[in-house]
Length: 215
Length: 130
Image 1 (cartoon, rainbow over the protein chains, first blue to last red):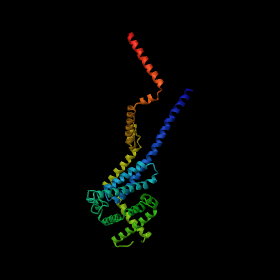
Image 2 (cartoon, helix red, strand yellow):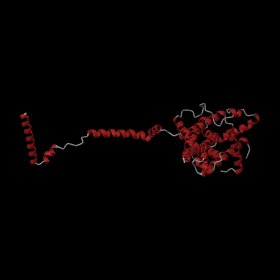
Image 3 (cartoon, rainbow over the protein chains, first blue to last red):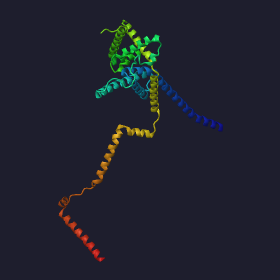
Image 4 (cartoon, chains in turn orange, yellow):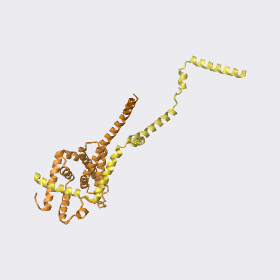
């Protein structure tokens, strides 16, 4: 009887402890993959997102700032969302930040109109010029021509309008759908298709003019 | 406007995308380090948000909120003004004497005068007896 009582007592005591351990482990298991996958997601997308911001701002430091602010907003406000929504959300936040950046630049240029608009304040220009890109300068001689062609292709991309470049990068490079691109850019799907088509046409003409060839 | 054909678009896209991918692969180490720091900053912000906040932090947040920032001083000023006003105003206003003498019946007034006289007389007698 005493043993039974003890046994009952022990099993009663160990129950909640085990349950609480299980609950702790469960919540830890649930939290860890979310955290890890968010970190993995950011690690995967940060370079591409940086390129988008850098193309839009033309400045390395500003692009980094915008990207960091966007990532902070994503992880603090939308980390609970399903992971397949993170990519369009990050790009949406980034595009909003870029729009705000351009507005601030416009006001800044109006207020300080006597100052030069050139970015000669020590920031690295974007895209890097062939003379300024150390990593590309170190490539073997056989690949130099190819590297220069790729730099030229990036320069062509810079010649597009903001909307055309956004639509091209999101649709073609990131592989987002027209609907997702429209949501990110804050315009209709028809506008996205128009911007994208014009972007491709302009890039084609620029590439043809560069190499004196037709596609 | 002539739209590019699918084949042409494919070539152009392929070429530009290759250049972009190459640019991503060839990012300078300093840029990679900066991106890594930015990512760590963002993730630490996520951890800070997830941390449970203590009572003092919550009170500070409440005070820092714009609405209490304005509402608390305004309410305090109103309370002080109201309490000062109540302190200075007499609770029972005096009746005007003119109204009393006019409205009071003459018999009552005579009786009141007699009562006052009798009271004074009694006090005088008591004083004389002492």
